Amino acid sequence: MTGQVLEADGIGVRFGGIRALDGVGLTVRPGEVCGLIGPNGAGKTTLFDVLSGIRRPDRGRVLLDGADITRRSPVWRARHGMRRTFQRQQLFGQLTVADHLVVAQEWRGGGGGLGADLLAAPTRRAYEGRRRERAAAVLRACGLDALAGQYAGALPVGQARMVELARAVADPPGVLLLDEPASGMTGDEKQHLSAVIRHLAGEEGCAILLVEHDVAFVMELCARVVVLDLGRVLAEGTAAEVRADPSVRDAYLGSGAA
View 1 (cartoon, one colour):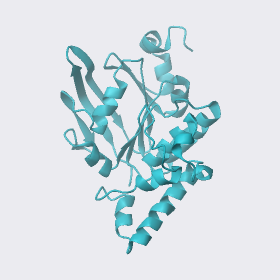
View 2 (cartoon, rainbow, N blue to C red):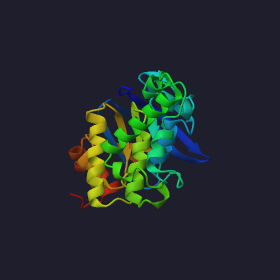
View 3 (cartoon, rainbow, N blue to C red):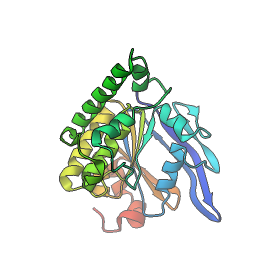
C-alpha cells in the first residue's frame, strides 16, 4: 500500500444545538506527519470519527486520493488503506501480542495491500506462514519482538499502546489516524514511538494524522500542526508558526507559552 491523500472539506457536525465541528478543512499528504491539537471539547475525536467513517457529517466531505468517501463505511475505508487507533485501549487481553498482528491481516478484498499477496498464497499453511512473517517483521520494527508471546492483558500501558500501533500497520496503511498514541507512555517510550512514526511516514510513505495532548511531543514530531478550538480551525502551520500565533497562545497554550 502506497501513501494516500486524506482531505476533510468543510466538515460540520451538530449534537442537538451544539456545533461540534464548524466547516473544518485539512489535508494530510503521503509521507507527512500532521499534528491535530486543541483543548478538550475542541472537536478532535469527532473529526477522527468522521474521517474514519464512524460518524457521518451533517455537511462537508471526506476525500481519499480525491474520491468522495463521505458515505463509505469504516470497513470499506479500512480495506482501502485507512487505519485508526483509539483513545481507549482496544486490545484483546487473552491474545498474545503476535496474534494481534496476525488477526489484523485476516481480511478479504481491499485496496491491493498485503492482503492481496496473502490471498495469493497457494495453501492455507503458506497463507498462515506469510501472516506470521509479516507480524514478526512489524514487531521487530516496533521494538516489540521480545513481547511476541506475551498476553496483551498483562502489558503496561506504554507497551500496550505500541502494540495498538503495530496492529494498525500489520497490513500496510496508506493513511494512519493516531488518537493519543503517547498517552500513558514514559519519556523513553515516547522517543521510541516518535522514531517509529517517522519511519512509517518517511520510509513507508504513509500519511499520518496525530491527535495528542502532549504538545511538546507534537511540536517536536510533526512537520505541520492544525489547532482546533470550539469546532473550528484556529491556526495551521509549522510548529514554529503555531507556537508564535497569539491566538493559539491565548486559547490553548497559555499567554506565557514559549
